[in-house]
Every structure is written in structure tokens, then in C-alpha cells.
Image: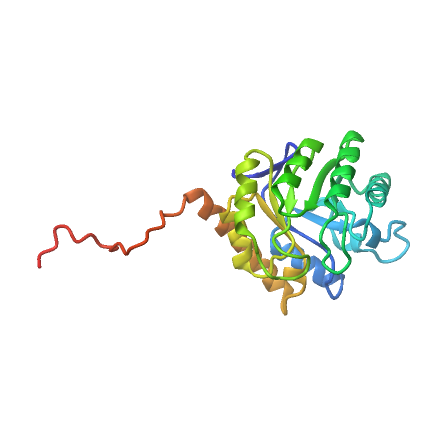
Length: 256
């Protein structure tokens, strides 16, 4: 099987989905099911950890989905590290998506803090998947820090703008040929997701692209098929680009 492998763990789906912004738990569960995702992200700060009241976790079957806690809402390395530790202590996972925001308006990552948090948490035994910019230098620093995968943004979080800098993503894929690369943030349509996979990326992580759609469940299914198509297109190898036309039916042997 053509599995997504991160830190030695194999996943059948290359679509990773978030669990925020849905209207209720039932819609969340239905969208997750339609997406075919096996890994889902949950914000540690938004989960009712004592389970005394209805919690997001009530709608996510731990036997079916692999939980990836994230540090959404953190603005310093220290805060992200603390939240990651909390998620592990309450039994969510020793995997973590590190997200350290550097600017409240753009939600772009604080890359220096992200590298610092990644390095410390890797030393503590975490499997770290950092959300970062599409800067190749930063990505290589994260690889050196021990990241299990690198997750560059396609566009600002929640913008739905699609992949804005395909050139940088291509460079990242060339510089980091063996570690999983996951486009995280900015995907708005199935074609955006397909493009990410066509560029050779190993997976796509999205939330708003599904939850913000008029019909989230239907969009989740569309994203599932888009990721499959993009991956198959990448493996098949696209035809060469040509400046001039080339007839679909060769002219040789045709009587005039």
C-alpha cells in the first residue's frame, strides 16, 4: 500500500483534518467520517480535559482516529511546551503539532520559537510535527531539531487562498527528500489539496477548508477524493510541458 509514514507509523489516508469551527459535535463526527482521515488534530486548550461536561473527544472514536494534539493559541515557545506536556499528561498523545504564533493578525508562525520548542520537546520524547512558514532555511532548522515531519503553510491560516508560493514548496521538497512534508493551512478547495499532493507533498492538513464550507460533510468527501487524485497524479508522472502544440493523433501514416 502507498501509506503515509510518520515516525514509523503508517496511515492509509493522506488527509489530516482539524476539529474546530463545526456547528456541533454531530457535524464534526460526520465530516470526519466523510473525509476518510485517520489522523485528526485537537487543540489541547479547547478540549474539556476533565470530561465532566460534553467534550469534543466524545465525538472522536480513539479506536478509529489517531489524535494529534496541537498547541493552537500559543505565542511563546514556553507556552507551547507547557501545553504539549499537558496533553501528554492527560493521556491525549506523545505526538504534538507545534504551533507558535508570531503575529495575531496574520497568524504567521514565530519560527525561532517554533524551532526552540521542537528541539526541547524532541529531547523529551515527543514526536513533533511543527507548523511553519514556507522558508527553506527554517524548514532545514526544524529537520536538524528532530522534527518527525515539517508542515509549511500554503497560505495564512483560515484564509482559503490556496497555495500561494508553489516555487518555495517545490524547493522544500527538493531539499528535504526523505522526511514527510505536509501542507498545513490555506487550503480552500479540492483543487488546492490536489495541487499539494501533485507537488510531491506527503499529506495535507486542513480544518477551515472543510468546516467553513456551506456543506462541510460534502466538502470533506471532496477533499478525500482530491488528495487521492493528487497523489496518483504525482506517482503517475505528468507529461512534459511543451511550448507548441502536439497532435493527440500522430499525423504519420495518415493519407492526405
